Image (cartoon, rainbow over all chains, first blue to last red; front, side, top):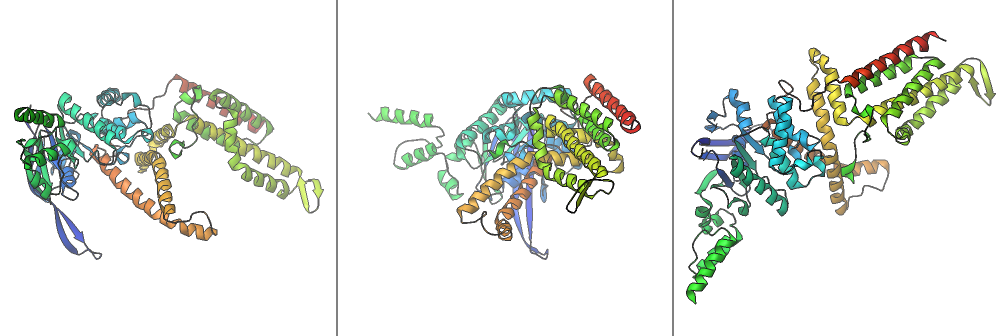
Length: 290
Length: 267
């Protein structure tokens, strides 16, 4: 499974054209500039970048909401610029947006989850089956009759995820799904995303600027000014603390602490990601020194 | 709380009327209203009253709740009655100062009042026993034939249900903006009407901007979930007529026959 290609971009460039009031071209902003990346089926990918780095623009290409100015995007082997594949692409690559309120259409949780399958023309019986499965997968089944207005942010975002799962996608693109949530809501959503990746084998592309959320990713792409500046495993990325700082990105607190300790002369390895790792390393060092 | 407001005025309970297909209820209400204007004698109104009583009884909605709807039309009712009472020419009945109450006026006023009250009661029973969602579904299904005349039936009903979903969200947002502006010294409560209307501008501008932004986001989210209009779409909760709906249709038909026969002929 893991070696099949899910998504690939080739020299993807997207330009925003800024116009003045008379409609003359004022300037061209390259939101995405010559991006080449590939994602294998079943991977958990994270895309990092500060505001305006082009990561959301990039994400919208994966779902054929935007089309490249130059280059091309393939989703599950289909070129997004071919109109005949449009609905297959949107079904295969589901998308979760930032604001949970603005992506829930139904007035009852179960109706919202059924919206995608309804659009695809799935028979009624099967819609109910899919809704039940999806709500159970994100742990929201007991809220199926509730009004979305009565749910917390994290719960709403899980409903949105269920709505996408009900379309049976191969890949889910999450465009800063946790940006508007409190810490608990963030945990809920990330837990749901990881479970989908591990249990159902759905490819996840998580776009975020919270470092804590990406340490479980298989691979990370770091974007800046439309370019992919760094890519690698979390450990590879977070061992380059200085480089990340240049790109105006934070590193997880534990990683930062390990980095500072190393700078002070302790033999701590690069790219520590979890608290447990650091504690283990420190106890070992302590044992050696006494 | 603002979150908890219910639209329309749905009254949650279990009853035979609640369970009916929304299409039946819409058609029945329309026919009932027509029947009120067809009938112009006493017998007709007795039949209508009996039908209405039966309907209200079966709906299990407390009478107090239904009567609430009457408050809003009280003034309209009063004006209608007064005008009809005093301004209808005919044989004088009571005469004082410059005003005359005529026999015809009295009859017309009573009739108009009864009509209005029945009309409001009848349509209240429909809105009280049907969720806004169901009403939209019912309307869409009933208006389906209009598609041939290129009326965008599906789009209209989608718009209605999205509006219903976003009203509480926008109300909450209004509340938030209002508090934010008040914290910065905006005054929404004092001054003349014109002054107050002018003060609403700093409330409305951000509200509109945010509504447009939401609309944009929502459209994108809908497209991302394969929304492409009503064509080829299936329904999660399709409207299916059951036996009880047929019974209800027959009852309404029976009522209409009674109304036409007795309401018109026996006078």
